Length: 313
Image (cartoon, rainbow, N blue to C red; front, top):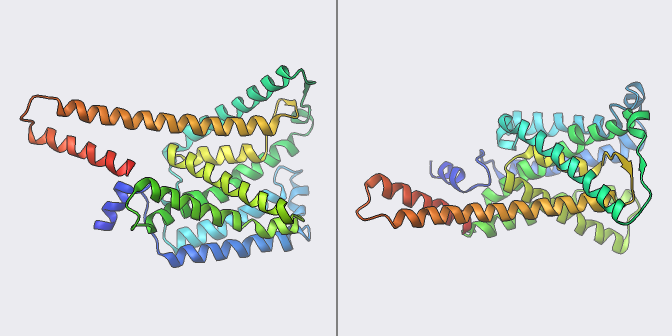
């Protein structure tokens, strides 16, 4: 009973806690999955048959990760570990907001990219691939939003981040607890990419740099999830960072995407601080009322104070 109460009040989102053996088992399963995909399925071109038969709408990335979703999410997490979609961050009533937020983020990338192109007087040409090769352009995006990005966000932000947070019960400072959970879970996220990077030929400082970038990106996605509590939105942002669908050809696309995600994160942090400040002001104003308060008012005031203290500390 106490554990359930702690989960409801303190966690990033309200979920069912699971045991460490399920966490370790999932990491092991995902390592085996990524090795199988990279060393067997992709190397032998096994999934290229699906890509050719669907004219690229279902590419190899989507096919492989759909298999991963069934194996790791449906079979292991939902059936064996007995977790619901809500426990993994997939809350149905947040889908529409997540889709709308993704659309706004996509428009922001295009607008920032256009602004940078015009300010530098660079050449601007329309991206004809959107109409001439929609199967390739949108097939790659579908491979992310229903495949790679979806699987990674469910595993590493929806599940691993929150479950590691719950395990860190001895860290009483809530901000530190979230920070440690982010660092641990996203280091695992980056480490699982190591076999893929080795196969890609990354060595030396390029390998170290790539690992650090992956940790930072994982932390950014984690922050977006903690701040918005909407995993669908984070899946959309992750997808657009991996595959940009642009109206025009530009050399500033990656820079524009990075600017947008960093600006979005900073704005959300500022909004969260303002929200916390408003709660404090509301509590202080309630204390300024002539005493004695009613028992109900005192209970509400202490409840607000308790929520604020737990959020900050």
